[in-house]
Image 1 (cartoon, rainbow, N blue to C red):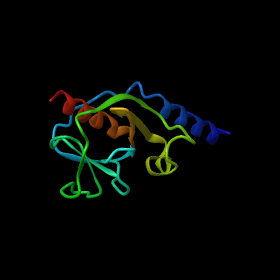
Image 2 (image 1 turned 135 degrees about the vertical axis):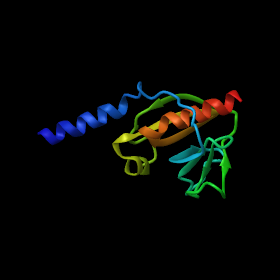
Image 3 (image 1 turned 90 degrees about the vertical axis):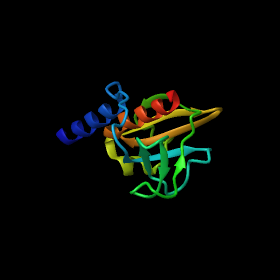
Image 4 (image 1 turned 60 degrees about the horizontal axis):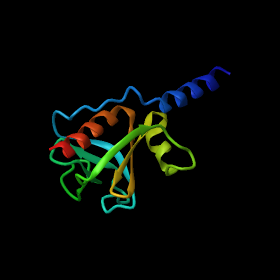
Length: 134
């Protein structure tokens, strides 16, 4: 019974994203994140984002030096939320566990979702917002 309560509590905490606030990256870093949508910078196998070195860019390269797909300035953040089972790609909860969140964005008429770990969401938000403001 206690273990069920722990699972329920972790899932409930994942749904509450009110504590996630933008933080502009102080230096270049690569974080685990997946971009999903009908846009050219959403590519299979690109499970990382390079931040703090120009506009955010998706890449499969842990060093973030090659095969970068730059996220455009037209990408705007709408909100941050927890998982929606049955709506989000099935691989996301397995990749990011209970601590994963989804950053909902728009690029023109297209919905763009960015899945990441809760701890990486603030710097992704900060990088997205600062790249639009620049």
